[in-house]
Length: 310
Image 1: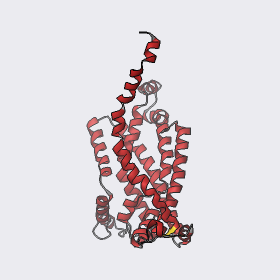
Image 2 (image 1 turned 90 degrees about the horizontal axis):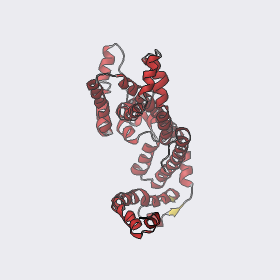
Image 3 (image 1 turned 60 degrees about the vertical axis):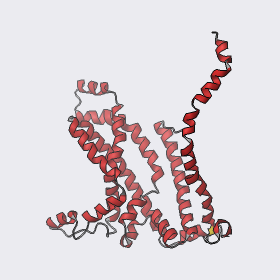
Image 4 (image 1 turned 180 degrees about the vertical axis):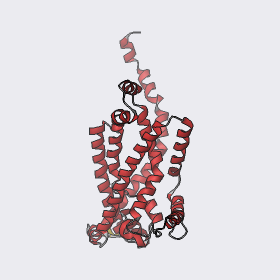
């Protein structure tokens, strides 16, 4: 059979097109769900520019332009909420990168496979627990009167610390507990990066007399650097996501000054005070800023880590 005959055969191209049709059909339920729950609700963005009254609906409420945005910006605590959100989110990003890197390096040095796998399993477990469960656990163990942590503090001769009611301490409790929950799962990414390093590099370093510390410094860390840069740049998209589930289950009016974030403010304004237009305006503003940061993060990831999603 000649080359031209293979090119001009009409049935081959048609069969190849329909061969993958069942695979594309499998995507249809997911696409429908995304359209219903992610794209169709975007019509509600109009509420941010309205004095929205549920009885009048989306088309009957008065159009007020950018008044909701100006009202939010003029709120006494709006700038404090923004500062809290950025501060907590940035601390989580930095700690969420540093701790998994250190833990992955420590696990990589373990030679007993049973101990290594046992440690991995233990540190992964908190990731699969919801903040409702973990919030109750933290409230119990950090209680100033009956919590085990403050019992140890009192036994050492210090005064009990009100971890969840002290504005100076509460943001750091959020960061530490978030790292405790997620660092085990994030370690997987860096352990996978370690497996891609050529073992011949370590063999050559041993021949040259390099100890384990020098091998880590000159081989392991440079080998992990592309994935570290990638994870750091992609995390920029979360700079306004300080963790609603966690904060909502741990905070109280006593720590609004240091723990109130954009998402909890939207919850109180929108669901508790029924100010739907104002809450939508806050959410829309956050989404626009997050979109800008996500776009910037993907640009930086492509430029410095050669990472592309399309």
